[in-house]
Length: 258
Image (tube, rainbow, N blue to C red; front, side, top):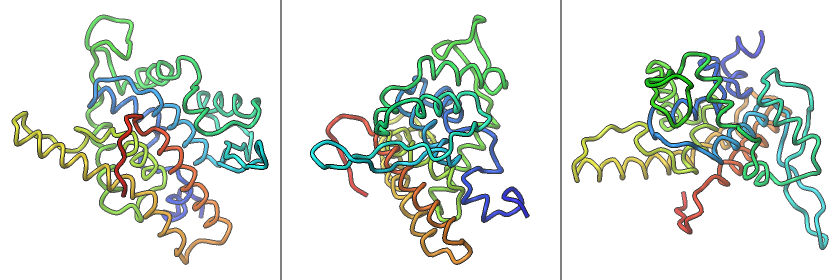
């Protein structure tokens, strides 16, 4: 039985059988269906998370200045993933001196967002609703079925992260830490009461989303079905994903625990 045939192994492996989209691709889809704004750090973080899930990189510790150790992205397997955009990121990381995960999020590849936009347009998941020459800031229409499927998986993670695919949990953690849960699940009327409910729902979902990766990790730590190697990888992957997601939090001096 391969990973694709084993639901539990598929969960830990980090590749959902329910979606063929990478995290950056889903972010492009959502940003044009929900938020109408271009994402920056979230896209780079999503690609980095995909490399963690693909078992190509991890966050490790290396000696730094003054006998201090510093956390960096380490390449554990330089083999190509088969995804040209992810492989481009992997090559950049492998060719560089050890750098922190924050560096790779703050210094993404040039034209990263446009490259993923072009890919989603080519797959007809977003189409231009105006002049030709599609562009992230031009009118567009996102595929409603694809958006609905992504939203349903996000709801499933918020309801029970221990039963979810690690990749889906990672997407939710990224959305929660970057404060991009607004308008994603709740549709309320534009009235004072409706906006208040929407804000409360957003804060609730963000808190659940930040906790999701931690709840998933606790589940893996006690899962009897896993061998030691698979358990150790899943725990390390969850920890790396959580730290990457946390770096996308808005730099506004505001923090809420949980």
